[in-house]
Image (cartoon, rainbow, N blue to C red):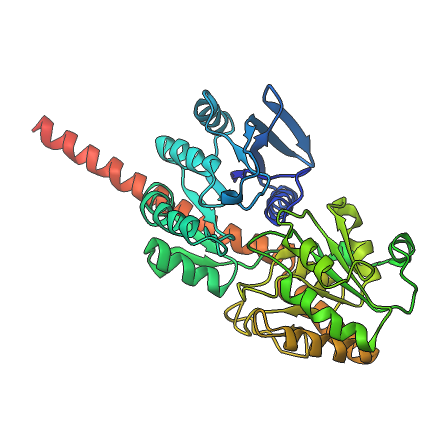
Length: 417
């Protein structure tokens, strides 16, 4: 099958969705599919890269300013002259059978959907991010209107299938875009499990002057308005009362300065360290160094790739998700994960104290988490589910073509009579 994966973000850009697109394209290529990727580039001219049999087209784009409206994130604009025609040419050149795109509100997705509809190519859309602004009501209202008026009509109702990675995202899609449940497929994000087989965390502890026996809590992922570790930071003073040498390590871009201001206000400068963005190859080392991982504890909006990777590494993960987050793959509190109420400081501090006090408990939860990820979140499992969706819509497309041709033939026959 000839598959085109479209995502505004792709390595070397560091983000969960960039990594997800990379892993899926790589795995599909390994399974014998011919895969091309279309993504963004800030270079003056388009670029073409290749890896493991995958051809990557990097379209010319411009970087948006880091605005509060856009959560100060690093985003790209692809609505530039010539890009629509370039995508059409790529789809024709590679005789694409199906287009797989990520992110419902990115302009690259809008262009790719338009190009695919022009050529009659089926489209699968994976949605992993909500179009919301929890810290500003005006912006949130604008996003809501854009979702229900623009995205719903231009994207959500023009694709053949929508993939949701968890229950809350599935519910969001149904509510926001009025999509029939039969067009939504649940496919959890795949994890590159083997890269977490051997973890060596001592160099990381040495780098940040953390002794081998000092408790280390890791928060892995971008800090933004959507994912802000306020409650985790507020829980640290109580943890420090019992474990004065414990450290809190933040790894990832900081788009919102609120977390840094809170650390300073609480006098935690010696205990909370902001490492910034690190190379993706270094993530296993940071996981190897920590005792507990916890990132998105405010919203209760699911579990991101970073936390799934922490589970794959055999680390106990704190999460504000629900037990039915993965629909039929039920999370077990204090067995393969530790669940807390969203934004509840007391829950977080109590959970950290219990975990840091009991090494055997941490090891048991971590091992159960590793087994859970290996059983349900392997790249092979994810890939097989996407292949099933591609085959399903491919069969529907062929059936539609057959009916159209039959109708045309009948019309011609009646015309001859």
